[in-house]
Image (cartoon, rainbow, N blue to C red):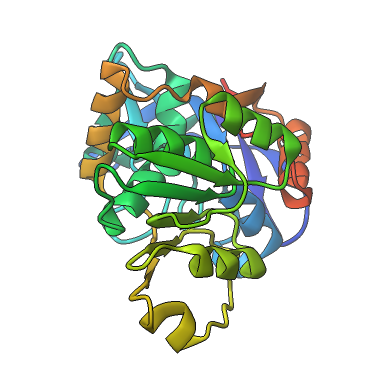
Length: 303
């Protein structure tokens, strides 16, 4: 048996379609027929820098589907027990099927679509984890740098957690308009208690740090931010600000997200602004656009 997969074979080259052997579930694993996979900005970073991945590899870490032969709807926690990541060190979701440990299969409630469940696995889960790391409290204000998939999730999660106000800093006009339509303020993050950096642009990151209220927390999430030079006294010590790193999330947070979506406390439908088939040319176009900058929020592959 074989299947179609869109694969990364070398650095800074277009992904290609290959016909590969069907995955085989090892003991303790399940085979999942993929219904939807999100295209994350991280995938564009991986395509540009092969040192981040194990080649050759099928990209894609936002995955939802059906356990083969059972009808069970599941989304996939992408962090494996050996610390490998789906779509990075192990083949991911730009394919028709995938084998994963049973423990990585997160049940999808009937009220939640495959598309929303897929993007929860990264953009929403990482946004929730960032808010948890910041010890975000009801009544505090939230700033969001960059309004892609993580930003839309952070806005809704901040509201669900009791934010007094949400401010979005975003350079793309279409995304600013979307943020405003969802009830956020747009502009500088003056005086916010918590700022989440999903953009990874050092001058903007530094401006956000300096705009924090006393005791404010800046959470660094964007993986493209490599260096940040701060005045340790003026920017951090004097106002008792904190800089926190955020990497990934936990399985328990995925369960929490599913329940929030089931109850209607979050609705990620507006985060999905484009759908493409499992087609190498279309997926490469999306990755190219993510590298240049795009008005789209989240693109998903529907199978």
